[in-house]
Image 1 (cartoon, rainbow, N blue to C red):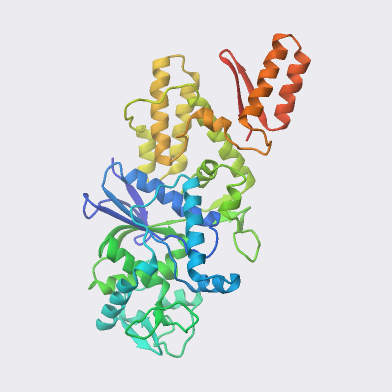
Image 2 (cartoon, rainbow, N blue to C red):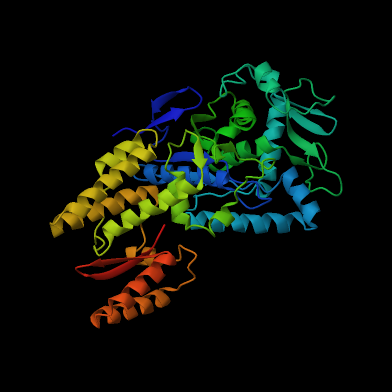
Length: 457
């Protein structure tokens, strides 16, 4: 079965053929750590985590996701909070990693920090100057866009169009308005490193190209990130990476996830609708948020709203409900072919989820215990590719998912009291306990094998 991706660079779906099947390389742009991650930051992390899980089935994958710990936004945050840059970056890096863990995002193979790659950055800039693709001016080093004829190929527009739609710094030292900064000077109050061009710090774009070269090589298989990074970040990455390597291909497949909107509006500080992931994790389990992020095709926009979260919670209840009471297989189980086919088709997670729920329906209607055990194994294996439904069902239903404030022990005590009332034929008291629990968000399910409960979505 062939994996196909929509390649942003070629604007078509292509079969994935790695340059070296024994070492597939993937790089995804990670966070700039000056604040807590918002839900938009979480989407690429979850999407490319699914892709990494899929690729590891067939290849030895080397997956890198960076941490940008040098940036003017970080400098501004440090001044505003009266903290050192190191304090800011350490705290928010740790917060990001904790949030990703809560979403079930597996750690990448490599998580490079920009501050640990300054010599690599200086080396790449030196080579770009030596080959005529960059120049020094007024303490800055800039990339000469005119030196790279293919500039604009990723975004598919002419340079003039790109610049008209972007915030371009106007500076007298630039040869061309579109030239972008590779190195900039730092004053005594700003973080900086010694370089051939004076004390300074790197520009944003050169950081990723240098870290990719260091850890993955001159040409990589897959580069991922949000759609908002196509221009200027990824466009500039291609230009400097290609020129630094004598014209060799920088990346073979470019994958970009779509925008995330909130209640049908663009998420922005000006609208006051930026949703911090840390706050959302206080409202819903990470697994619910993860499923919500996978509910739309990765390349399409995703509208975030309360209904989406509630629906994702209900879906996980259905998945875990179907698996309840069924043993976990003691041997490896292959994911269903239909789930694999959906993911191999440009990471079609909505279709993969639909295939999982087809299994849920079959499992819920089967009376054959051997068949049910087989279906449960396939369901767990398919869900594992999406990073969901891997915990014990009883733990899921006992988890803190509501605002009732009741512990598992509190609920069990009430259920025991209800059972005693029913045994004494005091049905009014039994109904009162049931209604009390329902009002607190606890759903009771009486069945032939006893009484179960779950927190309502």
